[in-house]
Image: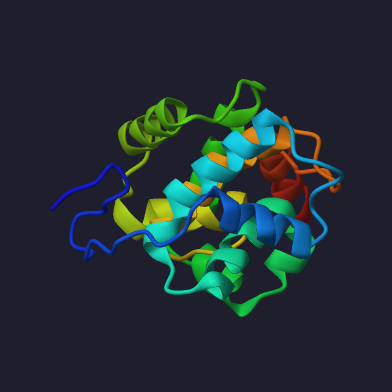
Length: 182
């Protein structure tokens, strides 16, 4: 069975989450100011569709959503995980090339993500986790698996909405990451 959110090699899990679950988490975490607009409700549905297959419970969903709403590059770079990722072959070059590609403030959509990945594959001699872990670390704050790609796809969408906390765009995140890196 395959779904749009399916990652080859990973089991397909039914998505028990809906937009109402995301909305409840936004309220609990105080990320939502006032009543949700139709655009915020659409974001909630999209977030549930993208992330729900990858988590087993509401705590896991809240954890992934936290990556959208909270980003501190200096804190990320203090982690052992960050040091492990950035010590790998070409990791810093991936981050530098990624930064150059993201300087244009156009929204980071699925198509844009594919273009970035294609460009990095063609430009650098890296594949798989040597490429994706630095991307995920710089833009989502962790170096895990494909669920973080879905988090990244939600970032610019959330940044354009009137949440109670400002959401940093992928462009702002990579600039902050590079500034904290050096």
